[in-house]
Image 1 (tube, rainbow, N blue to C red):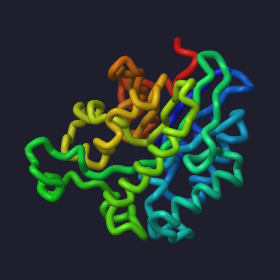
Image 2 (image 1 turned 30 degrees about the horizontal axis):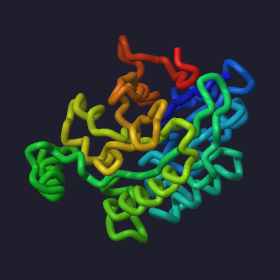
Image 3 (image 1 turned 60 degrees about the vertical axis):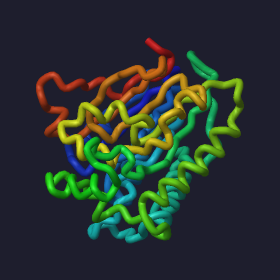
Image 4 (image 1 turned 90 degrees about the vertical axis):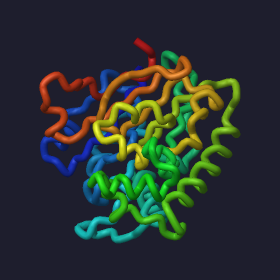
Length: 274
């Protein structure tokens, strides 16, 4: 019985759909943590999560930025918080757990642990080091031509900005994590890294401002994390911060995973620790 994790499936690419179709548990009791970016359209998001939920005992999903886009080709044109609520209901119809459901407890080897899927977005606080403000940091990114598609497709409605949506999500998530059983460690599952350190190896450092928030920098310690699972960066690797394992578990785009030497250890086993 294993607790496994994967992210950034991007099943809009046929080659990635084949990866999802071929994923199988080792045990009938294996859980799969999906740390976002299944796809961009509602139809493909549903296909990806339905495929995984048929094969794994329990599937736990945290949204990525791509699921929150409202692309023209999607028949569901909901924006912002309404789109997120639509995806939560879609998941519930498939039996997939979301950040809005009670956090489940993993009782397998390495447990018990509280598995907490998170949705906290980003607030541009991972800004360019030379920038003195968010506005200056964004301006530098635009000058370099390094601009996340979120700026055009990820709408914060009804919040006035992505920063405001992020602050609301952080406050609600902190409240729920603080209410968890303090006797149990946690596995925190978020699309973005909870600390800034993993973004420091980005080829384009300007992109870091779309990769998380400083508001979560101590969550792995405050909330007793046995492991933190994330994706988004498309740099799969295992690191340790403050003694806590951080696992970047992305599949990424075919052009990335086809590169010689690119790690293909997906899904990654989170518990029991190897």
